[in-house]
Image (cartoon, rainbow, N blue to C red; front, top):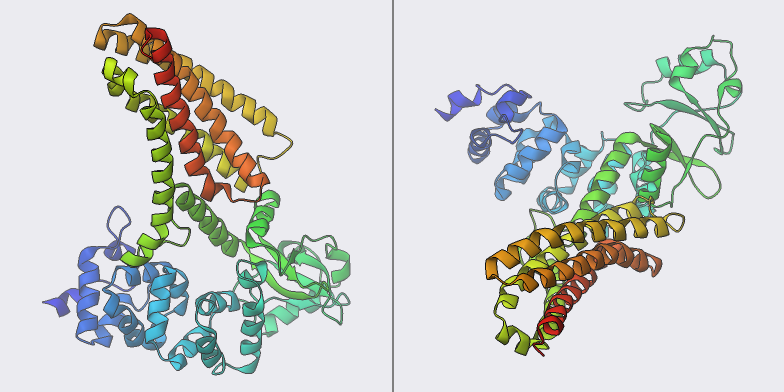
Length: 469
């Protein structure tokens, strides 16, 4: 029965691979797992031999962990190693550990240099060397050059396949060269003009090249002011440059302005996605590198410090509450309403903090507009505080039949929402200026501010107003 179902799923058929929500179909994964268990390479190639690398990556993550390396081995030459750039780091490392170095070398040999480097970069140096030794000399040198650059730099993201021409050529020379040369990049968007020492002189966009007659000199068309990227430049800064200037590709140069590679928008999209994902995780108190495939112990080690920081802030808030123990004993309604004050303050602080951290990361928030944004957030906090003061004041007064209690919690709402909005914007700015990543450190500080001020304002105002001290 399983063998009949195998042929019912055409290779590369997205409707057979994914359900209406875009998730991998469980029955499809079961058939692939069954084919792997039977070591049925023919059935497996029918099922998954022609998948797009992104689909293949999702399928690999959905497979049983023990079946992933076998999936690669059974597909053989039909497995596109680019799929390993689409899986989580832990999954990729697990697969590479189980494959023979020769299998990995054969798999990365046909990839663009940036994809090959991405697959190999997290392996131990000894394993990298063993795989690189089995590659042709030129490919090995290109990958070794990429892997020498710092992690998260432009050099690590670049590909070394590009088209470079001398300024003495004409449009006709360039077109003939591209037609006659077999070993060109799979996709390219511009030609780079270099001198005999490989120093970058400028670039010519393909659309501009094709609009001119064959005798036109390349030097006449090239843009000498073409924006370029230093190989050691941080990938996040490069991503911002692509976004700011709507770039499709950018040449990568070394410190001597020699052309060493090229970055394209697909590489930058990956960078943007990674950076945004890391910021979201950090804001949630989750390790930047945490993945769904991580072990229990790895996740515990990543999350424990943030939970510990939250525990310390909770202890501080509890200490503030203990200072008003007598007031709470005399008016039980205060204990009932305290969580509302803390919750509203925490949510308001998180809103401001999220906006601030993301704006700092994208360089939209800086010295030039910090004062204006702080004033705006404070005003937002005050207006929200007044609005919720009216709502909560009416609710508290009606609930406990004490009109003054409504006024007390209303005043506390104004204080805590204003403080939360202010803390949510000021704390990330201060941390950034101190050289601390605001995405990582803002949460505990903002939580402390909102809880302490919220409880102190509510219980303090109540104590003074009702004479509970």
